[in-house]
Length: 138
Image (cartoon, rainbow, N blue to C red; front, side, top):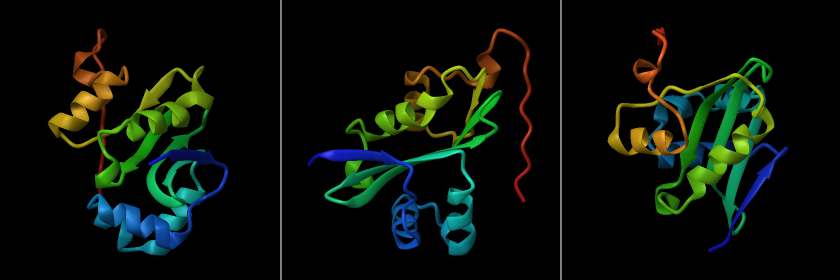
């Protein structure tokens, strides 16, 4: 099946809910209005579609000048491990090639760690200069 990629057009609420639910990100789907507003407030959103159906999404937040933060990268389970995530990642960061800080936070899951390493990212503890990251979930 051919996958097409698009930016500039935000997915509809029902599409977002279906995709986020499909990957188990139910904390996002508990408040559909907030999810839709968060997507709309992103610097950029890239969607992957198969036969018109939303099967993947990547979104960047930040200022787009000094920092670009990959907030979400989702691929429907039936399309994982087929290059969709890599292409979403590439297209999402493409406009921010000159941005110094490209950041993401992810789960401590071996497949995710391997994926982000394959995309050229390093864990903060592996950087040459001592660096700390702080986060507060609430």
